[in-house]
Length: 300
Image (cartoon, rainbow, N blue to C red; front, side, top):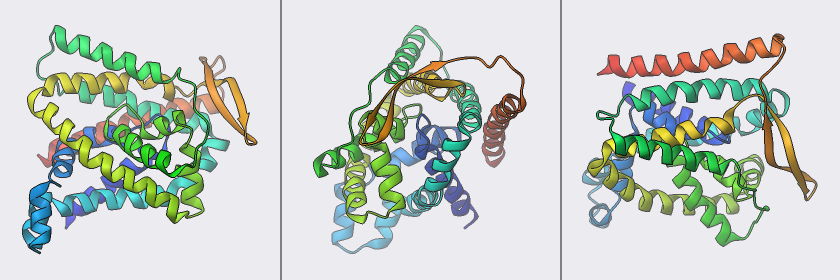
């Protein structure tokens, strides 16, 4: 029971990360060392699992799919999404630098701890690391699309968004921003409990989970070092999105709402109270990952 409670809180941490544009729940899963088990558990929903359900062999189905693991993890993720959506909307509105600072610290530490799991650094790993970094960096320069409530597009957002959430460094929330539907699906639909829209989105997410997990499981099994190098690059490239000190360089108004296209990044010139707090939160973010990493080692 204790392990499932811990998994629930790890799931909550993943849910928090997935709500924050630029931060990935996959990063949290990777640094808490449940990423591969998560991918393999999702992959287990196959023909054998379907046969077990049809034959009503629930015990074998639960064991085959690692169901208690998934229920604990996703239960925590769903709980955190519904409980913090309004809170983070408020915090981003009033304390953006401080929130970004904490997550910037998380990501900096994640780069080190994920990168050190690569057992063999060679030319191919370095090249793949650079490619991953460039891909993640390029996302920050893409112009966001307009909001679209078409049900097929919402279903597609579920597929692509969940794929991003599964990849450390490629934030599912940020991808939804690029697709134009972040506010519609992760804020408005959640806070207003638009069950129909959320159901279509979650169906797309479920389809994306089942299909994409097979691909990830295969590449992890056959190219683990290269995959970790790519994921480390994704996380490294995401730092540009999460940098705390930035101001809107260009934005447009769509249906009365501001859509940010590009930012100007800067380094604070004054050591005021906000800057000191932001630096402390960066250090707190780093310390949080360090604590999680040591806890995982102690559990082993």
